[in-house]
Image (cartoon, rainbow, N blue to C red):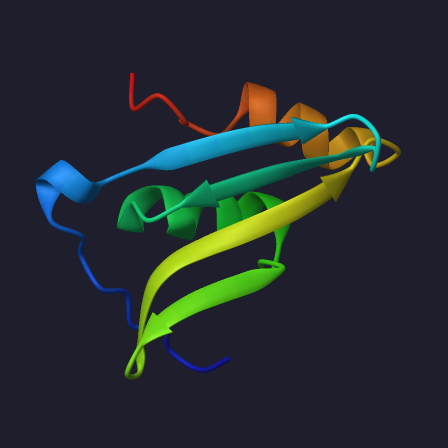
Length: 84
């Protein structure tokens, strides 16, 4: 497994969005928080899309189907989305 290099965002530009796409029956999660990206990668697996600046990962997005109940429950129960 190759080592991932994450680019730390500017504090004012840090974001995490969760979109529920009912007509496509999926949940899209995007974040550029480094700790959350690492945590979600462990819980949900490889992201659907990684946004890069040169060789560093600046953000990641996961698309989770409504049918994938285990990933949805991991996201809700185990991921520290709100940094509480």
